[in-house]
Length: 459
Ligand SMILES: Cc1ncc(COP(=O)(O)O)c(C=O)c1O
Image (cartoon, rainbow, N blue to C red; front, side, top):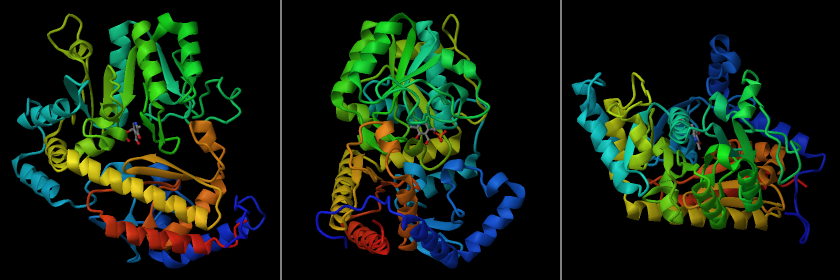
């Protein structure tokens, strides 16, 4: 422990040595994963096909998931606090999903025709989400957001999209604007949009601009300057990419009011946050957008996504409309995803949503307490079943606050947590799944404390 009154910020010279020690320990207990990684490198650049899941020195190779437990190629087990980036609401190999999918496989996987199971999942979404009268399905959250944006542009006849600095909405050109920008891209409060991904055309900057999350003045300014050009404002009600940062209600309300006043659409990306309320996070805030994108839990662990909105907005996709917006996709609404999504939602009623949200609240408090006890300068953000750790004095209200936190210390704690059998995102984001209970939290707490003890030399 550090002396009372002093805080560990992880800025001392010893952090490099501790990082090296953690890495050596990791390599020592994951030799089979290392061999698998060396093999993968021969056929995939960097041995990887999903950059977000990559971390140094190499990611674990996981061979099995059951409930909240993962097993790697070396036989090490982990409590899964990531759930494939929040998408596996019921953990792994959930019985009802496995049964529904197995039954559907006997009947065929997809047909270029209408499927009853599509309407089944569509009704579940429209039944839960107040602002959604109609939905369309896609194969991923990326495609859902892409189509929602196209819909917003077609509906308003305008091109400019306002997104949040640091907001991630999938991997497509329009939204590769200021996803991981330097914190010096313009002064705080006045971010200059940048393209931080090679290969994305610079002309995207003509049709996408950014404001800081939770900044009402910036929202008012962008509408004062560009009100008549804005097709939509897009944001996550709890910003996942910045590290689970909830929107302040007055910010969401300001965006709702401004978009209405200026004839723009408000678009919520609820790809991640849908699980936080029975009717999504919009239901929890009681602030309703015109159009919403979904994915992750709604497709029950299979590839899928959806976008939906009011009858009026969604009517532009209606083949009977004058100039219907074309939306195609060989696997859109495929039967396997539909039945998996329906089973996932049927077992995630309002009581379950509330129960795992409470577990998340407890877990964040417990982690906060441990970080405090061990003297770390840290902020734990989140809402309900979501949480994230930031090594900073805080507060963390937007992307820049999170990006300025100590990233090296995050990496070190990530490896320490893996050593203790806690599987979280390398950016220290975590979530609860329904197989978990209070006794799971006790186990997580004990492992988390052991991981912090490993970092006793951090100053
Ligand atoms: C908020 C948000 N939007 C969109 C996406 C893209 O979804 P997908 O990975 O299914 O394409 C993600 C994925 O992590 C996300 O977190």
